[in-house]
Image 1 (tube, protein in one colour):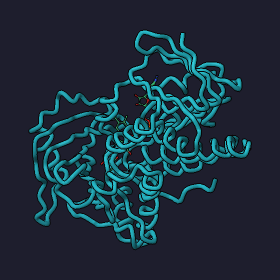
Image 2 (cartoon, helix red, strand yellow; image 1 turned 180 degrees about the horizontal axis):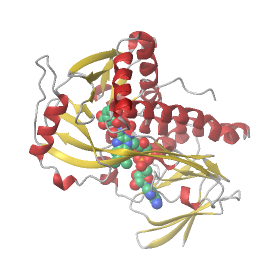
Image 3 (cartoon, rainbow, N blue to C red; image 1 turned 90 degrees about the vertical axis):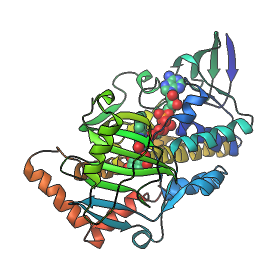
Amino acid sequence: MERIRTQVGIVGAGPAGLLLGHLLHLEGIESIQIENRSREYCESRIRAGVLECGTAELLAQAGVGERMKREGMVHQGVYLRFRRRSHHVLFPELTGGKCITVYGQHEVVKDLIAARLGAGARISFEVEGVEVNELETRTPRIRFRHGGEEHEIVCDFIAGCDGFHGVCRPSIPAGKLQTYEEVYPFGWLGILATVAPSSDEIVYTRHERGFALLSMRSPEVSRLYIQCAPEEDVGAWSDERIWAEMQKRFATDDGWTLREGPITQKGVTAMRGFLVEPMQYGRLYLLGDAAHIVPPTGAKGLNLAVADVRVFARALEAFYKRGSTELLERYSEICLRRVWKAERFSNWMTRMLHLGNGSEFVERLHLAELDYVTSSRAAMTTLAENYVGLPYEEC
Ligand code: FAD
Ligand code: DHB
């Protein structure tokens, strides 16, 4: 067995794990990273697309924002569409000048992998049999197989960045974490299509047939979603059926048209809210989806992962440079304040925009909520400040 010593062992090479490795490198803190999928898989996994203002700034300050600045699309707002009419919510005037950047998560991942490998980082892809052990000691260990060999990383800290289905969170002994969960009775059928986006900015639509969302990845590629059942069979959705359904849900009375094109990817995502308290056990710290999930309607998942990484990287910097454990001890508390607010916002957006929340009375309340949000500056401001990203917690 090969045994390696490092300061921080990182499990998972999604956005959380990659950004953490990069920020630690900038502070001269050593890490080793393992990932159970291939590099190609990680770089082509289509997921989120909206970067909060703070996320984009953080990536740029960390020196990995060059392509994002060139190819990412800065948006000033979003459209809320209901009763066949679109309402523009403009962020800068409601938030003191803040915007969002539409740039695919897989592009962020590509940029980070290139930066890590360019800096000589050690990332092992396609590892198997990952285990995390001795979490209560000062030298927690990660065991895995790679290329037929057994390996062990002996670390000062383990960063569990292995997503919702990873091994880190389940390795924490029963009873040490409090779990909170909300399963929503909706799913999203998401597609990627080779067609110029039909709108200059993202459109969130509530329709009597269900929610629909129009987003984009580039001037040539559209990303769209429609509300479906959580266990919907993608196979039942031909391209023709998808476009026909989208045409109905996005329809307006003002002459706007939805452009159609070849569909290159389809997938169904179930929706849940989930989090654990605390986000840490011994010397294992959980970051991103490993610790919490939000329904995607507020576009918060990726941004929360980045916010956790920011706090954890600062906590490790304080530990290694000043011997201070104060931030490490407060890591979970600091992150969870933001996570709960994101759960709140995502829950609110999800309930307001989807169909099938409850009685006809409740459905009408959600329509009234949309009417209110699009007509009151105060209500619009609460949407805007959450959407562009609440200020980072002091740390
Ligand atoms: P992940 O991106 O999940 O990364 C975890 C990494 O760990 C993965 O590369 C995984 O392969 C690896 N891993 C897992 N197990 C192991 C193991 N045992 N050993 C080693 N490595 C392991 N958010 C939005 O805001 N908008 C969206 O539209 C949206 N769509 C989504 C669609 C899907 C299908 C999913 C699953 C999530 C979506 N999200 C969306 C959420 C957003 O993508 C996540 O919040 C974000 O990926 C979190 O980053 P992460 O690094 O914490 O986790
Ligand atoms: C996208 C995803 C979201 O969850 C959202 O709320 C807005 C846009 C996207 O994939 O582009």
